[in-house]
Amino acid sequence: MIGVVGAGAFGTALAVALARDGRGVTLWARDTHDLATTRRSRHLPGVALPDGIVVTDDIADLTQADAILLAVPAQTLRKVLTIHANTLHDRVLVACCKGIDLHTLTGPVATIRATLPDAMPAILTGPSFAADIARGLPTALTLACADDRAGMALQQGLSTSTLRLYRTTDTTGAELGGALKNVIAIACGVAIGAGLGDSARAALMTRGFAEMQRLAQALGADPQTLNGLSGLGDLALTCTSDLSRNYRFGLARGAGAAADPTQTVEGAATSRAVTLLGADRGIDLPICAVVAALSEGLISVETALQSLLARPLKEE
Ligand SMILES: NC(=O)C1=CN([C@@H]2O[C@H](COP(=O)(O)OP(=O)(O)OC[C@H]3O[C@@H](n4cnc5c(N)ncnc54)[C@H](O)[C@@H]3O)[C@@H](O)[C@H]2O)C=CC1
Ligand SMILES: O=C(CO)COP(=O)(O)O
Image (cartoon, rainbow, N blue to C red; front, side, top):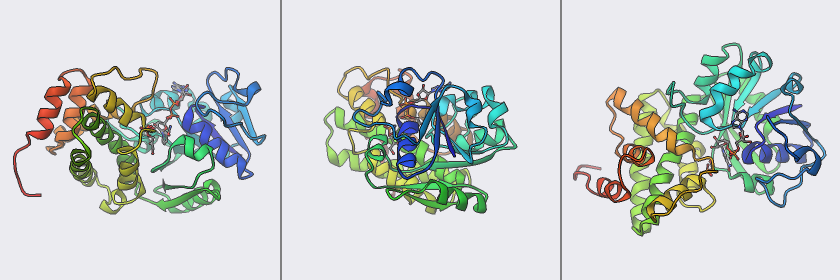
């Protein structure tokens, strides 16, 4: 049985995909509302939960799980691990979140390692919208686990006919790719929302990718990982699709409109975390810094755009 912690858009979509493929899934939510009775999630309109999913609000029901997917926002992961340490402390835990903890400046795998040292941590990341996964559309993801044997077992256990998992042992690269692309997607949304056009977006994606590579290498990632699904792949998806909440957040800000406060927008807090990480290591991350200042309300959209456009001329 596979356990899923968090019945938001992504946790529910993964549960649906796995159950459709015949896996037994127990989906834990801190409050199941009417999910258990209606078998419909407000996050995934038009999708019914397959019979193979058991919905519970008792996390002890995950005690027998072969692996537990953690599909909560990155800024709440540490709290969830701490509160439910009794159930989660010695389990195979697959982080499904994309962000850097603003207080510890660690990614999801490092957060699991620091909080529950007896657990086997892994991360599932890459270009994949919950809505696509839940509809059974083809998706390719990165599964990163430092222990290659455990990674192989997870790759087998979590792949389905529509969910294709590629394996790596580079957890640092995988978690940074997923976290950083959200920041660049906000910047791209701002540019498009402000009417700067597709050429400006392509420039931001390219220069943003260079920032992703710089920080990831400084933190010990394999550059090849960033060239794969969890870096370049997810950057391409998130910076160009209206389905992305990070991109839509930027679009709204760029157009001078209010962003939807009910949405999970990981790139906002993560932009601040990576700017701190970069400053600590003397790494130049100008796009991340502008997104951080904008997210914190320290600068206006006009100032943000000027900062992005007024970079000194230098070698590529
Ligand atoms: N939605 C998507 O298309 C994708 C999302 N992700 C990642 O998945 C993670 C979760 O995102 P979504 O599911 O989309 O967000 P969401 O906002 O739809 O759901 C988040 C869920 O976490 C739960 N939660 C929050 N704090 C909690 C706590 N302290 N204890 C227990 N549960 C808590 C909420 O009740 C909610 O059910 C994010 O890091 C996101 O980047 C990754 C790939 C695709
Ligand atoms: O990570 C995602 C797609 O890979 C989802 O992006 P958003 O969180 O911006 O919606």
